Length: 209
Image (cartoon, rainbow, N blue to C red):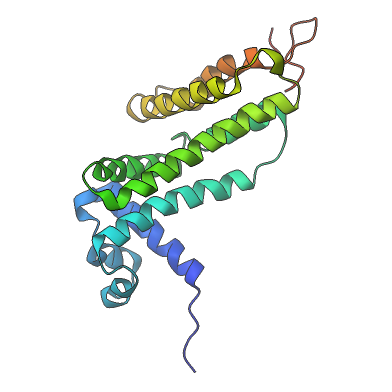
């Protein structure tokens, strides 16, 4: 009887191996042969799933989005703490997320001259904007000053801040990158939260004073 293949586990192994190749050796080394060697899989077997480098690059890019989506789906809570947790998943604040950003930037740069990656880049950007939209919607749900908020503008503004913050943390993380990032995001978002007479952010349970 033929051995059953756990395709999800195989894809996780291939995605992890591809990420290591990208981060450690660069985009030029992302080949079926190198990824197969890194993953401990026969190159001929991997080539059946990814007959060209374009297929492998697209798989890597899409795997980043899938990994982020799975982490975000596991979060719970509400208000500003939940929003900050959502946004934290998109910042290079540990080795996993740093590697994802490095790989994303390499593949995104390739998409400028490789149309086969264009749709994946657009989709990942759309997903990031979707997280920003969910963040603003959550603040609105728990009591943001919805009457004075231009929602689309705030989503675009948060998206731009998040993208810039991610690059800043990659190149100049500083001594406390997570503290810095959370402080920047908190100060940006607190004006959108409802406050009580004492100046506290009542929607998120975060002390404004």
